[in-house]
Image (tube, rainbow, N blue to C red; front, side):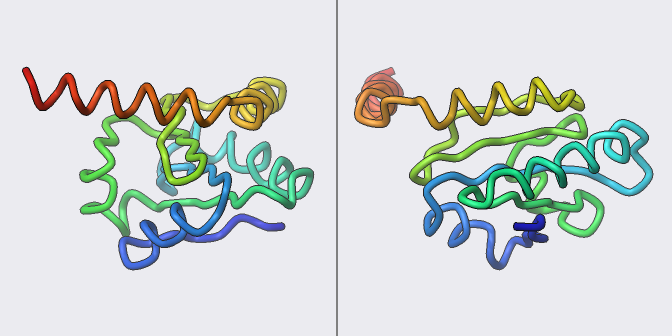
Length: 125
């Protein structure tokens, strides 16, 4: 599956409707973004079960701000609608494969417990 352009209008539904979503926040003027793009595109072809989204931070400034993007490229991974990975910087192909393997291997029941505990701590703080 090729990468899919995401906008503020479809970002939330895309994240919630697909089991695993990777999102590359990028801009056309960004050299590291241009270097990472073919690595990301190749991974999208190798993993058709994962939705690979791209957000142009210039066109989607409000979405980038809401996602707290301060450096590009930034890669985010969502599983079952939960943000499970976020890291700025261009990854080599092997690094991207490690992220994909790790996201697939997550115990989502444990992740949900951790999220619930964190939210509980935030409320009582």
